[in-house]
Amino acid sequence: MDRQKILIKNMEIYAENQKLHNGFIKIKDHIIEEIGTLDQLTAEEEYRVLDFSDKNVKAIPGLIDVHIHGANGADVMDGTKQALRTMANTLPKEGTTSFLATTMTQNNDDIEHAIKNVVSYMDQQESGEAEIIGIHLEGPFINMKRKGAQSEAHIKEPDISLFQKWHQLANQQIKLVTLAPEVNGGMEFVQHLKSQGIIASAGHTDATADEIKTAIKHGLSHITHLYNQMRGFHHREPGVVGAAWLQNELMVEMIADGVHSTPEAIQTAFKLKGKDRLLLITDAMRAKCLHDGHYDLGGQKVNVVEQKARLEDGTLAGSTLKLGDALKNIIQFSGCTFEEAIAMTSANAAKELGMINRKGTIAEKKDADIVLLDDNNDIILTLCRGEIAYERM
Image (cartoon, rainbow, N blue to C red; front, side, top):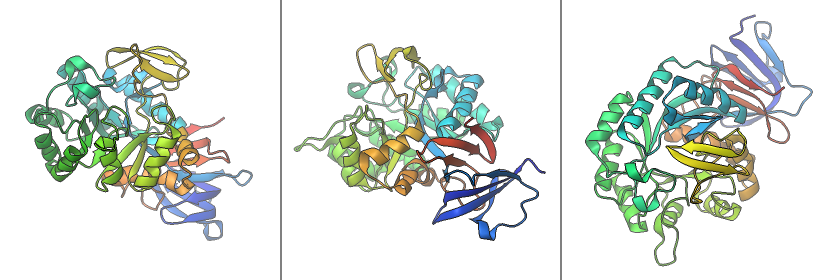
């Protein structure tokens, strides 16, 4: 038996363009080799078989988190291989198989060290863990007025030459940048990101709705953690929130935990944006998977009480949300279908990142990033590129 060949059978498969009952998935060399129904299944002998005939199991594509800082005591800004390894081995427990390692507003040296560490790790990461598929640079080119849990001391105006230095250090792996387009030099920076094929996202921003519309013309295409640390909706100034709701060009992130935004606010965004323009993220910090207590985020003290992370002044400081829980929450909060929730946690991110040929759906010749769920949509098993990364005991 070849350990690189796995056959999973007797489950409901939420495949790319169809739902298969009594289905099977064959995996070979980290890739989905074949999918189908049991009446089409042949040649089982060479495979390690995972048979779920006695359970009601659903197979969905691995979840993709484009905004996550840390988990299980580790943070991207720690700048160590061990921190990234901890994250990569922890995230499959919540169904996440790919993620953008997300930085914070810190001094230049710390950002550069974190960037170089991520790229070095990407060069040698293994298949049985969540894959780092790039870097999300959150700050430091943001608006002081909407800093949230970002370090005020290190906020700076957009600097294209500095960014280019970082992008070269990152081996061109910076995929998404959170910035405030209304600050001095912001529109030119958005245009530069667009020219480099990098997603420009408005976040920690006090922009007006008109300024967001102008930024869209320059290449803005994304909104970071909708509702949080941005100009809110007002009936005479729709703000960033109003623009995010109405502008079809914008892909919109949400932290669907019921803390950063109420269920009603999340439902509103779903009704206005629809399943194709929303992404669920965690924005999680190192306290995820750990007990309440005192932690660090970007050099600032964070208190976690009842799994709610706040700075000492009460400002929300990231989340402890698991992406698998966000998938369940969005169904409860918005009334969306299971298939729509899958799109918001997998396919939409893969499409936006230009990786839909590899990830985001269950289809032949794609990476074998697969999550198996039980009747309660709790995770039974996670495969990262064809290897079991988590199995519920």
